[in-house]
Length: 313
Image 1: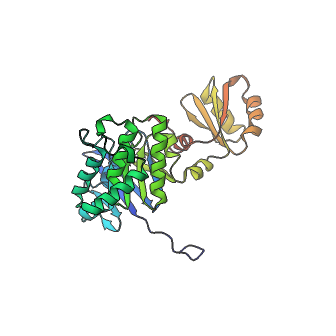
Image 2: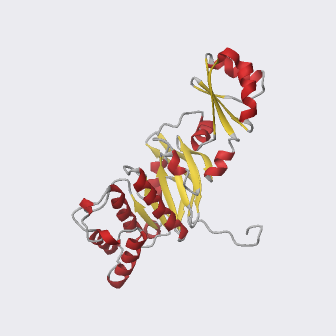
Image 3: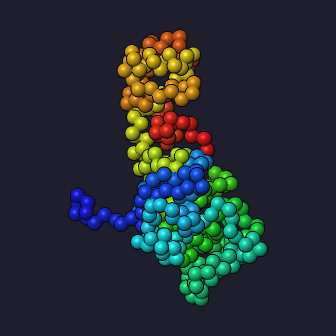
């Protein structure tokens, strides 16, 4: 129960202490996440961070080696068929039959779930309207743009009304306009109560989600609302390039009592009052400084602060 006395929503998907190995290589090392109804949850991480393995485990495409995955109350390890009834999946690789029309592709998806007749027509028409595809329903998918094809994929994944929609790098290959329309569709789904989980290596895309889990080397290094994670970094991030990064770091730490983070040739400071600190930095470091840049904290800054590494998508 919350402090207001209202019952808190139950997670649609719960992951606890999830581990996975490929022979001797650990891909996941004790991951815990909760995905709630009506929220967009982003898994953010560079290649090799473990997000694709986690996605495949949630899709029941890999066996559970250690830990637990519950979707809609069903245990993925022993009730995979029930879990599959709870999820819709849109993979990064296209799954459309390009020789069929939009309507025909959705009808084929319906056949897999036993959806036909009046129910198929009702759900298909509602999805085509929601995704702005009504005027393209009789077009063969081979003539559609990348953004329109993605929306047809979403319609297929939503046809059986899943509780959790899983999207693997959904905006890959889309132009900026198509990405915006795709996100309008994703947000509309969440507003109707569906849980949406997506994987991404795009920082600006993860920033649009309600919740984000940042992954690195198989671990969850940060989780929360993007605005909350950025707020943890302070009001600003100062990046210093110095002639001798090691010497400059020592001066900042020992003379000014700051907590710099050195990243190759750069020194980074997360501070509450960056504008007030700048004159002191310039005065103290003097000719050691090549450049000083000031910016607002981003999710990339969160990743760097948590891992000490550059975010290489």
